[in-house]
View 1: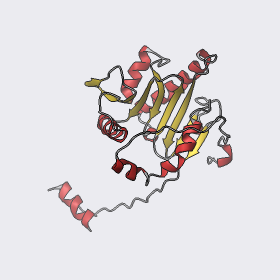
View 2: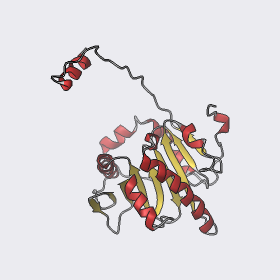
View 3: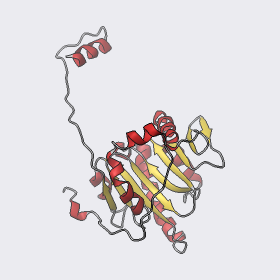
View 4: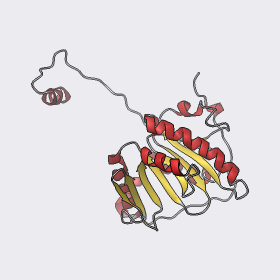
Length: 236
């Protein structure tokens, strides 16, 4: 059964509109104008304050708490992506890497007192959940590339939904909540799991363009150089 729009939660976000002003380099501002998600920036900002699970539909995923200024944790499926995205975010914010924006992989950890955004692999966050199920040091957890559904990402998503339910009970009087913000390619894969998300999801659709993939192959390939043969086929 397909995932229909009528099943997606549509609500009017309560509260005044607000924006976060960031001083970015001129070339970054110029590049950001061409991104489809920029048109949804205000809607996403306001939806973050809504006390329900939030799901972005486009290409990566995220989870968030709201309260004081804790650390924003962002997971990536591979170590190379951790360093690349951390470097890019630090550049766009106009700050030095390993101070305000930090990253942690298996054999490299640079985290300071002023750290606000932390990039890491899913395995790193799983080890942190082992020591602290509530993840008290985090205000936001973003699961990027969640649609890849690796073993670590799938298990981490399951654990975070439990953390979400526990935190909502523990911090009910303090109005602290946990939102799941996912930007993914197949929303129905996540929304269909009612055991993980007992309450309706707040879905924000970001318009994106998908491209068809054409497969080219040869009937016979010499075993001398597969790379060379691939190059020849690509040029045709």
